[in-house]
Amino acid sequence: MRVRESSLYFLPVVTRVPLKFGHQTITQVLCARVRLVVEDAQGRIAEGWGETPLSVAWVWPDDAISYASREQYLLDLCQRLNATLPTTDLSGHPFEISHAFQAQLLFTLASGTPIPHLATLLCFSPFDLALYDAYGNLHQAPVFSLLGKDHLSRDLSHYLAPSAKFSGRYPADFLTQPQSQLPVWHLVGGLDALTAADLTGHEPDDGYPVLLTDWIARDGLQCLKIKLRGTDPAWDYDRLVRVGKIALAQNVAWLSADFNCTVTDPAVVCGTLDRLLQDEPAIYARLLYVEQPFPYELDLPQNQIDVRSVTARKPLFLDESAHDWKFVRLGRELGWSSVALKTCKTLTGALLSLAWAKTHGMTVMVQDLTNPMLAQIPHVLLAAHAGTIMGVESNAMQFYPVASAPEATIHPGLYQRRQGLLDLGSLGSTGFGYRVNEIPRVLPDPAR
Image 1 (tube, rainbow, N blue to C red):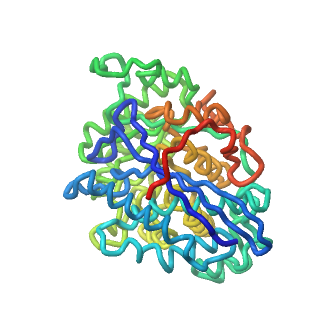
Image 2: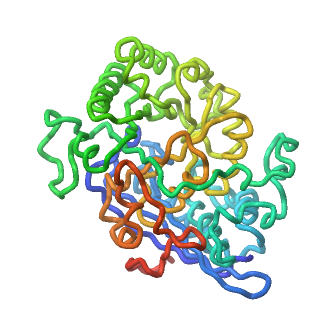
């Protein structure tokens, strides 16, 4: 197939409570939604949709440049991508088109600006997702059923190294039997009230839970991701213990710890874990993994930290650093045991990282970018097919639930966590199964 048309929409979303990323707190975000029209060699036409929140604070945590300026750089790049993609002569499977576009054009379009690698991938991701949706709609089949040798012209040895390990293997070979329901992780933010003593009086009175115990009771949560500071070991330990004791009292099965990419010495993480093991062994036992304590850019000499001391204690997941499979390979050399996949780095990149990681004995997880609206659906589908360590993280229903109200009329089980699960049963049978024509969403005018 070839891309014939591309349309880009920016959808503003406002948080109901602040969302903290590292040193930055956000109260709103723009989501980039893309519609592609494609045509195959027989002249058949199909459309596909993709969406990603342009989370500036996550992909570009640089206080030296104003938030507004960083966001504008991302919007401008999205518009250049929208104008460029239909003009290329790239054709084939979406995996092939996306990989070639990234190799030949993506970073050239971003050159001349200070946009980081991760932010560049973020801007391309809605286009990448729309390619897959269009291909599935063209073939009247689900996206994840079209990733084998019957649809791809080359095996993974063309894309990954060492190539011999991937000869005759395709992305489909690394997928699992899809789950129709997934355990879901709830984000316990650093600003969240755990008990009544934490209330400030400024919490919104909008009908949603405020205290952690209320969220657990309402959604039947079994998995809690705990956001930590990474720069204050005493605060971090206290936070782990406080959330852990609530988890024990409420029979929550699993915890994870996110140190916010602010740690530079593995001894800080090891000290926290060792103290937890000694003083609170029941909480330590529920801690399933640790997520990305260390800085983003693994390829910088100062960030090439040997982390084997941490992985000796708990699985350690690359997240922000796992830009692509080459960064996953570098991470493994430094001692990382696991990788968090995200559709906002492109599904193509996620599939390559999944294949490389599984081939080299690494476990995987699918982590959230607080995905609302259409962005939620490929995110959850990837987790359903990837064979994650435990379900999927999904927290848009905590921070901006109203944003997804139109989509929730068609897919209620994907936008409301019930009994600790998300339910994929409402999805359609082609593409990502958005059923976009049934969703009562009024779009703004396309971006120009």
